[in-house]
Image (cartoon, rainbow, N blue to C red; front, top):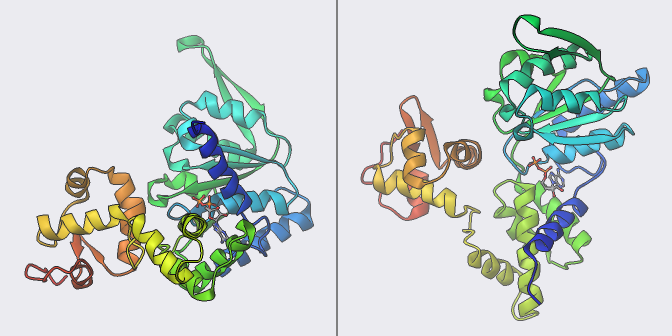
Length: 334
Ligand code: ADP
């Protein structure tokens, strides 16, 4: 039988769902954010009101959607999922907001991509649980106020700098999610391995963690590829060797960089002598959207010290030359 790609997709999604922790206690790492959220939820519970609006900022795969689900779960309230790109008109948002149950948690992923016209409606909704609906056009246009059920907005963004200040200011609290350290990722892998029924040595788990780019989603994905490898190649060799072989097959290098990370560094070094290079030039040369480079590739390369940002553009550090095995002849030393 042919494999139906739709079915494959759903399986992957279902697995991602099964791997999600459902309580703050089960959520690994981010101790600061967990403490902050716990206080916010406890206070709301004591006063029997919906929790304040929450903004979750950080690169993809660090647990923003998971935390939104936990907020709903821990406060015993229903959850509605939406996303910025799905809200292209104020009307889309009006329909969504007016259909919320009292106390419902509304999650808007990629909230920085919402339409401008919807943003203004959201200010009022967040502040007063009210919107104004415009009826008619031109001189005869009027606005009709509509009361909403109180709700908690959980917004997620990979680009908190792109949110207009009035929107950012209306969140009671902004959580900045950080990349996970290897010990935390080992715990993610350990937990997921149990859920998936994969037996791995501590060394194999550590090896997966080390190559997961500080990101639980990547740790879970690599674990699934290692599971595949062990399934097919069985007990031949140690599981640490299996991790190495599986990840090499999928172009994940020993420090966890993927093809795009390496392509960016490679172009920065070989094409532009180490920089500085502007984001636009870099994105055109690599053939990838500037947004992806800025919100996915760069934060990690900067964090592990392979890339620097200067007012004149991006630069490769001496460590990046060493990692790619290029002599730093043209290193800028910045
Ligand atoms: P985001 O919304 O930030 O892109 P998700 O919440 O979808 O990220 O998380 C991606 C995957 O990583 C999910 O499968 C989730 O279970 C897992 N995950 C994220 N954060 C954690 C965590 N702190 N502990 C355990 N698993 C996590």
